[in-house]
Image (cartoon, rainbow, N blue to C red; front, side):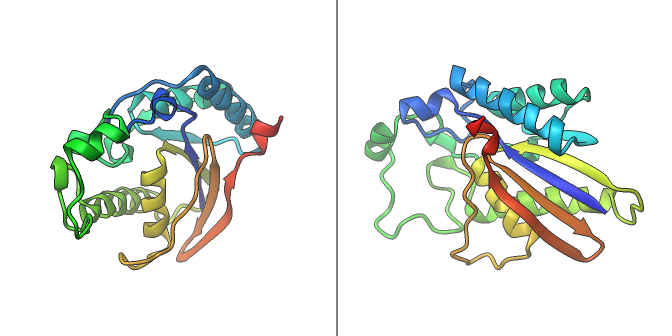
Length: 204
């Protein structure tokens, strides 16, 4: 049996500046650093992982490093855990982006690579490939093994859809706040959501 402890990064500078983040590589704010530290301490006390996999983008990497330091283990970085590749929108203020790259009247379609971005279909496929590889590598495991995944809101949502084998066209989404923590359990063919978006560590 394996458990996936899935963690979103703390508050980043882009959040304060109302910018499109995606692949723009913003650092954590001082509050984000504190959130990461609180999450790390809570994880070490309650759900200590055996390994940590993380997006290499600074905001996620720093959050992962805080968890790794608290738990006394290393971090392996995987580009498939990076946030949606939002192309030319990355780093732009939302107001500026709406002028430079207004959405078509029909809206963004699942196949669209509008503004040189990753399409929604490509994004889902990336999450599917990551999760499939991870589960294959841990197939037949008899011992208990907990893997901490540190990533981004959009990517976590895609991983959630992939884990539950939800259809592509679904109105279901998973909310994840700053350092929101999810626990998913996989035991053979059984996939169970234990909890979602835990943030009690932020309440002290």
